Image 1: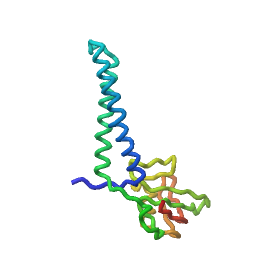
Image 2: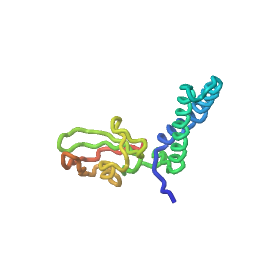
Image 3: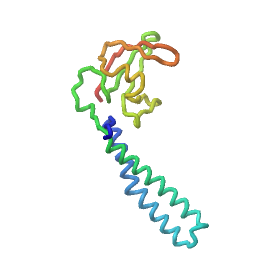
Image 4: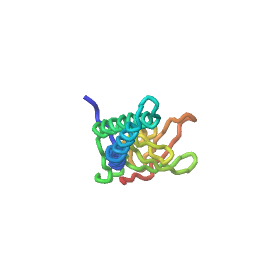
Length: 159
């Protein structure tokens, strides 16, 4: 039995869009390219044929990967929940660094959606694990490679 993996509604929509594009745009284009390459004759020396077959293999693998991810996901739409100020999966949390007075906001998302460059962090990350279950006004300590960092949770948004 596989366990369900949390995913935001937005993340699920992006994967569904990619899956649809692969199935209904990319796949037909590759099939057409293979057909045209076959028409050119000898397949052993046909670079277009081999390139199209390689694209097909990659595309079909990605389709299977997306189907598995979506079937194993538990889609959580945080906007449908009432905001009680508690940090949960899918919330956007603003933190105040107590040592530097710098603020930063993080959106807690699934592993596949995480992108630190745009402040989307995995619910499995140390900082997200430190925040989950806490509320606005709570202080947390996060262990970083540079040592412990103390933050105050200043805002929790269900967006």
